[in-house]
Amino acid sequence: MPEEKEITVQNYLDYINNKKLMGSKCKKCGTFDVPPRKLCIKCNSTDMEWVEMSGKGKIAAFSCIGVGTSFMVNKGYSMKKPYCFSVIELNEGPMISGQLVGVDETKPDDIKINTPVQVTFLETELQGGEIRVDLGFEPV
Ligand SMILES: [Zn+2]
Image 1: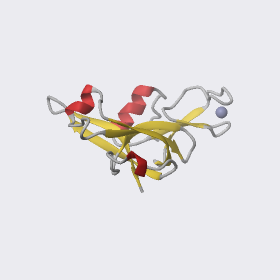
Image 2: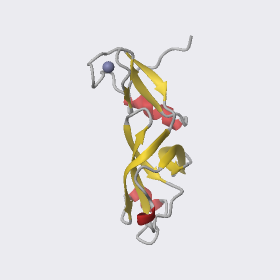
Image 3: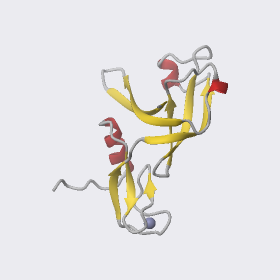
């Protein structure tokens, strides 16, 4: 049996780097958390396990940003080429945030709340050649 990784945010980020969206599931009451937690928010149980999320959900909120972080500016985003940041409600229940891709960022009125989306992993090559992986979501 593979060794169970400890439930930490660092391991969660390592999973994302390997293009896996993992969360924790409470063995007692079945509540999911993303990022994972050692302690269930619902029943305080510490009997948690890693589970891979379906990556499917729907848009709960979003905003299109023209003046972004330096990381996003370096990726070429600007007032003329805004990007959208979204909060997604996963089918399993947890809310997570990530960049919304595959939409027309210049027409935010066309982006609808509750649109079904699927997780995607966005790779950025950093200085020095290291690859950074970020969560993204795109309409399905
Ligand atoms: Zn629980």
